[in-house]
Image 1 (cartoon, one colour):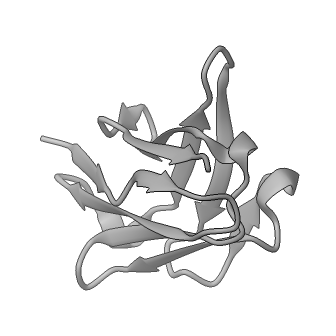
Image 2 (cartoon, rainbow, N blue to C red; image 1 turned 45 degrees about the horizontal axis):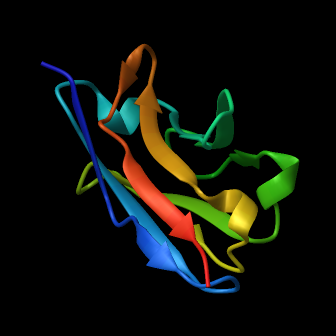
Length: 112
């Protein structure tokens, strides 16, 4: 059974940092790309970042380039999203994704 379990969200001030984590179970984690998406209040779900199966290739939505870093540890079946320089516009529920499977989401709120 495929499971994606996110953690690491919270409340942070503008300019602050958070690291999101996602554990993946029940599928060939080390052989597949992994994604982060987010859904801000009142907006459509938005793709944020993708990392290749071996971690060598990463891609980001323009709005987070230079601030967010996606990484993975295949030995632990974990994917991470390091978020620095957080802005109020980054407030959203963040989701880990693989194919048609989604985690439960973790709330990130950027506010002073």
